[in-house]
Length: 504
Image 1 (cartoon, rainbow, N blue to C red):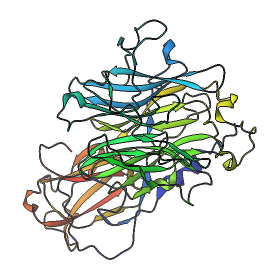
Image 2: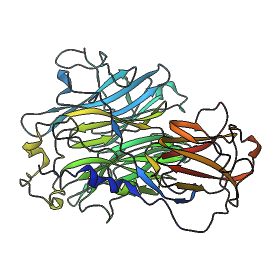
Image 3: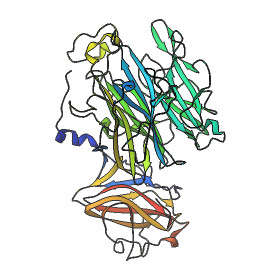
Image 4: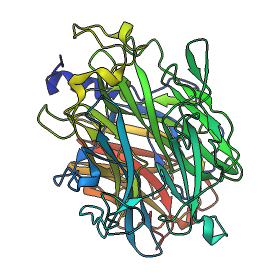
């Protein structure tokens, strides 16, 4: 396989993009409460000077791969599909896909398995005794296809505490599609219906109806319903939005994110893991490049869950490893987890190229062996394996506003002050920041001006700003204010008007 290697010094400019949007001075007063404000867009930003918005690549964990095929029933792949933290028993729980390769062809047989962990790094594969393999039930297999699992904190029925969507077929000769299951413990599952609730349909040589990848956001209070991201069809890979009021009756997905002319020719979207944090929908988009047969992960975001924007000029936030690494060719991110002051992103990784499908062949631009008639017959992908990986970043760390040696500044739009202190998530270990408080018209408030502001240095997700040694801004509660943050050699990730004693 031909694969380009771009020196890091050439990649760096792609991580930066303009953060100033010209326009009239804001007069509308925003209500942001005590919600930390991330800086992925200009929702809270009036203007900036000498700052650059940066996409911060995720850091892969030193213990990778955290999941590997080791047991006979796991075959050649252990691909995590869901990782969550169960508050009830204080453990991380993982559902993953095992895959055998059948020797007679490229066809594969999938199984589903379960693992638990106290720290999310070292995983135990318990003997569940639920299904037989090679004449024994001493394994961690689950008899139900559980691709995307939701631990539903809003559910009142204990038998439906865990919910799952999976793409599969009940009858080998029947249609494939979305299956729905419920479970009290995530192990014993019951099917909602004996047939797929959303099925693949065929007509005139194309596939339509529903595709074979999906993710689950869960219950969304903004929408007052369950939300899932599904592939609308198998004709082309893009991202669609589906929803349900009861997790049973799902709508056919409506496309919300599709490759556009700014993407390289042939770009397709395999799936998008989504979670909502800090009032923003974050999407970790697995992007397929048929010219290299590889899949990386890019960042997208939305303020409403429908209108999505790409981040960082489409540069990967999580990219494949070197040719000898477990994640050398394909990455698919799972829904992120907030763990303390960091965000964890578990991902499924493969060290083989993505098999060509017949519709991909015309999109391939480099010289490769002519693809076989079907992906099942492409023998050069047989030797690969699948693993589970882990990447991380600090809380609110996907995007930052960065300054250099010249003084940079950020001026916010006016907002109502609802707290009693200013919290700043920033890395000023090589520089410093100051926070000034202004009125709605942009005039410094007495006692909170530039001369009063204490220097902020060091690296913390919750620096507390102070003025002449005093962090208390309770006298400003209810007023319309702005912040001006000046900085050198620093990275600003987010800020909040917080309340004393309340964690950010």
